[in-house]
Amino acid sequence: MKKLIALIALALMTQPAHAQDAAPKWSLAIHGGAGTLDPAQMTPEKRVQYEAALQAALDAGSKVLKDGGAAMDAVKAAIVILEDNPLFNAGKGAVFTWDGTNELDASIMDGRDRSAGAVAGVKTVKNPILLADTVRTQSEHVMLMGKGAEDFAVSKGFAVTPPVYFATPERREALERMKAEKLSALDVDHKFGTVGAVALDRSGNLAAGTSTGGMTGKRWGRVGDAPLIGAGTYADNRSCAVSATGWGEYFIRVGVAHEICARLRFQGAKPQDAADDVMADVAKLGGDGGVILVTPEGEAIFSFNTTGMYRGRATSAGVNEVAIFGGEVRASNTPNH
Ligand code: ASP
Image (tube, rainbow, N blue to C red):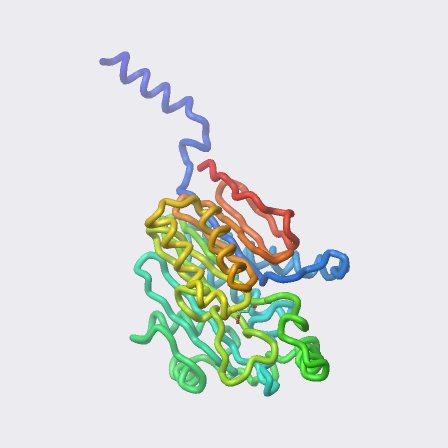
C-alpha cells in the first residue's frame, strides 16, 4: 500500500508542468467580412492596416478569455473594436443606403441559455452590438428595429451618436458610383465588410455576435442576415457558435448559422465539413460569403466560398493568426489541451 502511494506521488511529481496546471481551454475566431478580394488590388500599406485591425480585435477578445472571462464579453470586446474601425462595414464606416443614410444591424447570442438580442436599422447608436446585448439582458424581447430600438437605447442610457459619425468618403463614393453606373451592391463593394466574433470560454460556454451596415444601396428598410438569430448568428453550448458574412438574402434562406449547429448536434458532422457543406448549399442557390465557428472542443474554423475573408483566430493551444486571402489559413487547428 505504502509502495502504491509512493508510486502515485512520484507519478504526480513527474508530470510535465503544463499538465499539472493546465487550465480549461478557450478559443476565439473573428471575421471582418468575406468577398472578392484580389491580392493585386491590396497594397502592402492596406494589408498592414487590415491585419493590425484584425489583430487588435483578436487580442482584445483573447485577453478576456485568457483571464477566465466570459465568451459573451470576449465577443463584445472584439466586435466593438471592429465597429469603431472605418475599414469595416459596421459602426463607423458602414455602407450607405440608397437614401444616403447608414442603417446598422447587429445580433448576439449566449450559448449557455440561448438568450439572444438583436437590433436592425439603427442610425444613432455607436456600437450596435452593445445595444443588441442590452436588448438581450434588459428587455423581454429578442429583436428591436428602427426608431423603437433607438428610443430603447436612450432609455437604457446609450448616448445618441450623430449619424455623420458613421459616414466615410469611401462608402459615400461607393453609393454614388453605384447610382451613376447602375451597378449592383456586389459590383461596388467587392466584399462584405460585416464583422463578427465567436468564442468558447474556460467555463465551456459559447457565444456569437455579428454587426453590419448591410449592403450598399439597400432600400425600403432592407434587413440582411446579420441581425437574424439563426441566419447570421447562432450559439448553443450543445453544438457550436457561428457568425456569418455574405449576401444576406441567401444566408437567410439557408438559415446558415443554425443549420451548421444543427448538423453538428443531430448528425455528429465534423465542424469543418458542416460549415463547408452549408456554404456549398449557399453557393448552389447563387449566394456567396463565409462563416466562422468555434465548438465546445475548442476548434476555431473558417469556411468561405469567396476568394478571401478578413479573419483571425486564437486558442489556448497557442494558435494566434490573422489572414485575408483564401489558402492563407485554411485547415482547422487541432487543440491539444
Ligand atoms: N451579410 C450582410 C448583409 O447581407 C452583408 C455583409 O456580410 O457584409 O447585410
